[in-house]
Length: 400
Ligand code: GLU
Image 1 (cartoon, rainbow, N blue to C red):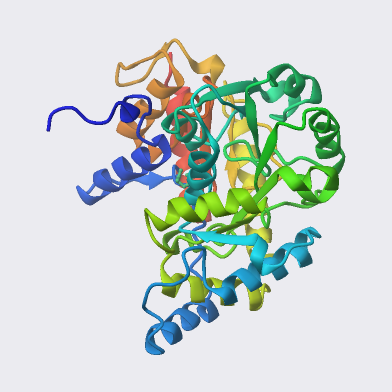
Image 2 (image 1 turned 120 degrees about the vertical axis):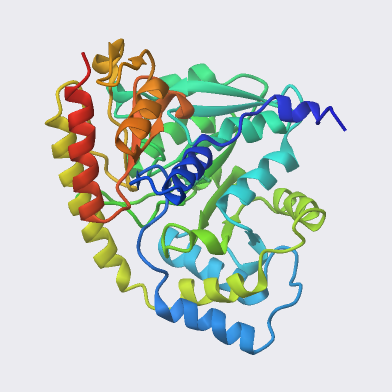
């Protein structure tokens, strides 16, 4: 078969996954690579969670499960939403999928038709617009650049809304900028959304647990109860419990949307991995003590990375409130030539030349809809970060 589906022509491969894969390939060929491209915590999954998975295997919990998740996990998810987010939900209102990404995929595929629009603030996580396009709908971008602290303002939200708007995707703390909306900022966006009852909200809260000193986490379904009936609140154990490879995401939202998602899931993965689900039950119900330490480590790394990047001539970096990314501007370093003679016209040229010449893997800002930036994940050891920052500094100093 020579021709693939037309829908594939509308999307690009994931840039975050692609660059991380390239970095792995270069490392396997013996190159000294520091990969700061993937968004995954470098901590190991806590032992009590691994033990729960081993116990599940030994107990023979290795068969198909309910399509939308085992009852024990949906119950744990409901308890988590009530405890942490004040969302009045029961297990029947909860849904489990193979990672946050599959939840987003299911939600959008289950609800979108050609002509529908999805409002996505820029900069965005790479996969949002492509999943919308795959579903045959249209992403509508709303600028939320450095001037607004990478946050969507109520005015810009209102300008992006049309009769065709079906969803607004909110992601706080944000991948790639780390921007974190306060409860008051969410309330202001909510006040706009209350006037447009046809717009649903997909709140991607996957970085909820990674919010640093002086900031509190809030989610729109909690601070704007009037919107609860049209909000899908999404989370997962990947970032909170360093379980990226286990693939467990979960959500709560309007019943008819959850049943559409289950119908779709019954025809694709059937159910999320049974063993991972039992591990996730322990992740949500068990001790969360390790999180305080993780947050402390991430915050120290963030401060170190931001300070070092701002010491490099030509780089400007805001201090993000959450997640484990920084998203600095490199606009002043474009249209220069590297020591190895590569012309750096775009942020993608910058990131590719940096990888080739220094072995440091980052992701270009244009993959997140905002050219002239790069995303660096500081979910890496201090040693790796320090080495990478020296290499980035030398590379930038060599641009002329
Ligand atoms: N969410 C992570 C990232 O942005 C994982 C890779 C992906 O699925 O994009 O790097």
